[in-house]
Image (cartoon, rainbow, N blue to C red; front, side, top):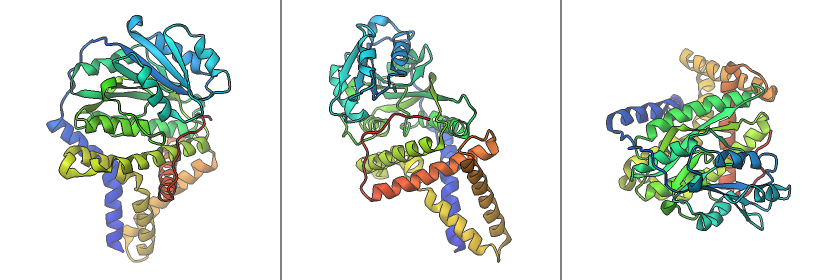
Length: 377
């Protein structure tokens, strides 16, 4: 039983600390910088929208106003059978904006597949319907494609939290951690998993995906499988509102994890270290082991308490874990509205792992998801 505890503890420590530190060390020893340059290929921004009338006009105008040659940048919005006036708003935005209506409703991935053949850009930029870019974000993304080895670039998401709620604080801390890890992975084989709201791909490297596949995960892996690098550009910045309602955040995390699990299954050939080496190591360490981390977390908690009566170290471990979960419970009871970081970080950590557990159950049950309502809360 003690062996189970130590194996479980080692798994958790490796996933959240060991792998990031190892990736950082490898990046320093064998990592490759990106050869950037101020280039200006033709760019098409793609946005899939479902009932986004409240924000779509402002978001598209944000892209048209980018610090990029206007004659070399256009926007395509795919309305996923919107019913709230989204289509009319987009249609009135001018000649640089193209509206495509997808009917029947089929989700974001199908929308991207539909738009790509009609895109004029050599570089395709992906923006969510509520994503606001810094003025130079597209130029920053594009500069990485001066390096012919680069096939996909992801930027930096900054969550804006107006009310100081826990989800916003926890989510922001999580993204700081993720961005630090991406900076290391960027110098290795590929960034594993991106946000999808401030990303760009060579049009020639785009491969159509099934409607139920997660483009933020499958597409970068497809690009990496073609031999291209997937890199992180921290100066390409996106501002997006964090979800303030924990139920909305939780549902989003379940959905994202479920789609990522199916992506891992679909791309499982890339997890063969004999064929894909460093890329396989990154995928297994960053995604597969992390999505399954709720298993060793449960095992470590249970075994430490079972051994607590006969081992002071196990008692200490059990009490520390219990304290973390109590703090997370306080955060949940407050509906994610406490401003305390001491409560917020455990709360968001536990929320993520419970969401992973539910997603794994759905995955085992064969559940797939292609469409969903916009983020709210």
